[in-house]
Length: 110
Image 1: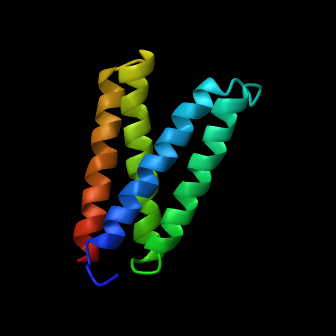
Image 2 (image 1 turned 180 degrees about the horizontal axis):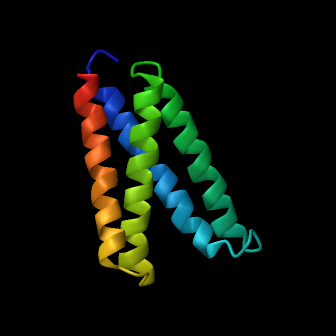
């Protein structure tokens, strides 16, 4: 990985895989529906594999914080947009704090 942005792209793919797995989990109905259950497992496995590649080149604490924070914020946002979950001011403020924290971690790692 000669390009220094490549580990970040792999991490972004890991976040997207984790979010896709979480959305599929919603449809797995307690792992009683086969296709969404398989999709959940595959997405989570891909997310961990991609994150493992990222931590070869990025600090593990930073990598996990960005992965967890980004995944949480994106999942919450998609919950509002796709499933009609509450979009209260408090929830939106919480998402803003998560995003600010991820940005701060990225800036401190430079």
